[in-house]
Image: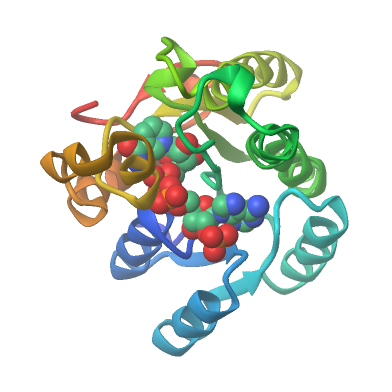
Length: 229
Ligand SMILES: NC(=O)c1ccc[n+]([C@@H]2O[C@H](COP(=O)([O-])OP(=O)(O)OC[C@H]3O[C@@H](n4cnc5c(N)ncnc54)[C@H](OP(=O)(O)O)[C@@H]3O)[C@@H](O)[C@H]2O)c1
């Protein structure tokens, strides 16, 4: 097995954290970020170098640029780039969602992905290999009431990924991924008590990580679903 460099946005909780743990367990190097200083500090204590965890808000182009400059110099381009970080609006009908909350969902879920692609992908193109996975959702391919801002961003992730895949040279791939339904903070926000009926992030990561490691240039442009989704 070759040791891969895996970049994960939103590695502090939920699916990102579970993937980080599983990639590390399997011998890969994980470069992760999140906004919570406390969670990043805890990750650093638990998982030292060559792994690297940083406080970065993906909605900030400046922060992502500084993060990428540092990591590309220390570790080189990632083999697998997982655009996992996202937020969901508090359940509300569209006309009840405050403008600030709407902007936050757009800034993180769409612009955050573009920021990460802007600053990491040129180095991956130069090296002529790598896979970019943009986390979508069942709600990137269907819709429900009270999550319109989130649905809008995940449908956008699908369109952005399709166009981006057409731009990539051979050797690279970009895919969108519906991870399925997993009991995380995000699911608890939109499903309430029903979230407990779904698998834990750790359980999900055990099948998702091998699936992600197996992706390659042949998958470019695919709209994928994680095993069991
Ligand atoms: N769970 C599900 O059932 C489900 C279903 C469909 C799709 N998804 C998708 O799967 C991905 C992971 O979801 P999840 O359920 O694990 O969500 P989660 O439990 O809410 O975790 C989200 C992660 O993203 C980070 N994050 C949020 N905003 C960020 C920002 N601006 N900059 C950097 N990091 C940020 C959070 O860390 P900080 O708070 O420390 O920043 C956290 O680590 C998302 O793209 C989500 O849309 C999940």
